Length: 162
Image 1 (cartoon, rainbow, N blue to C red):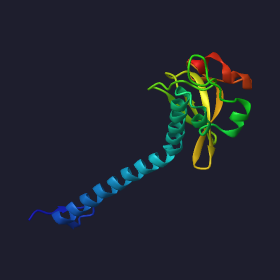
Image 2: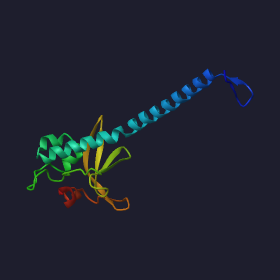
Image 3: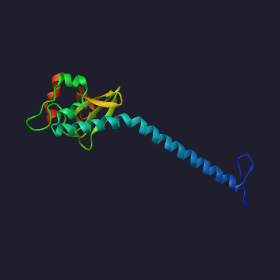
């Protein structure tokens, strides 16, 4: 039977070595699982906000103002009644989301740039467990420079009708 020694001259049996390896592997697995759970919980609000944004876009594309209103904050609806566009959709609401969209936390809110890395940035606000659309927050320029929306009238700008 082969035995190895620790750095202190103590004999360690092969069984003890395999138990140590197993426990080390188990500790590494638990740490990786913990990191995965942490990441899942950390990004849950962003995923929920993007999900609500996607449902809003679908309702707007159908021209369904009643359904779209469910995904809009009361303040947004007070400032911008949902009206059908001649070209389709609802005026002031985004029409699509690109596969390379960007979404991030901005304080308590979620900001979503639905285009390919730069363009209009829309704000989703928390309302209990839900996320509601609160309009245009600004524009994301190349180089990740953000320009805040200047006025409430920016909601009807050209970028929201594309």
